[in-house]
Image (cartoon, rainbow, N blue to C red; front, side, top):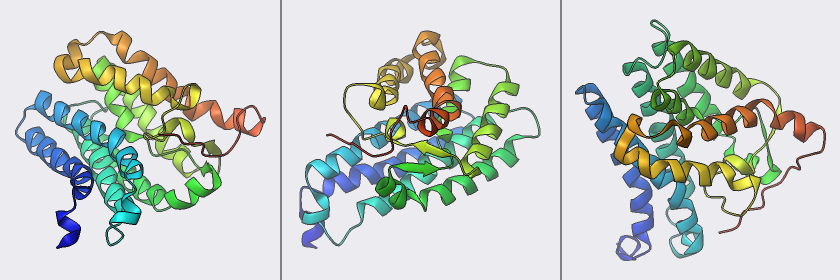
Length: 239
């Protein structure tokens, strides 16, 4: 009982709130309220960008050793950042007709496999195969792009996750905050998140195109730059 009465336990509850937000997003999605579902999914992203930093800043591993924040985070991420967002894209006609179900299954399986490797990835500073950044598919909905592009992007992401290519990890770790390229994706997503929560697809496209460009650059260019020695392996996180 003492574990749950500590004020630091509120940080674990904040991580678990991501699951609650994802569940509400799924309910709104099947109720046909696409806009509300999108807003709840954005709140999942807010949790993902903040909970790890809070947990490490207040040293939850030492103060609440009975609870694995990493395990809670992985479960929340698999459901809230992949499964429900991919369901959203399927139901919101982001994909070509007939492709949505297969892409949801492929992304969910891929995400589960990749998250099982997360501990080793953080130790080595590189990911073998692309990070499972399936939440980024929502950018195609926000930008109103033709379904063929979202379908091709998602299919390519699944394939890249399985290929034995070495990827640097820092620029896609959402609790990595420092000046420079390694945190650029995080800052760009935070800048886009606030207007997106309010205006959704009425938000100027200029908020979303940089994020999509960064994702495409990371998926297709950074393995080459890592192999060439331009980017270095490692995980240099600051809080």
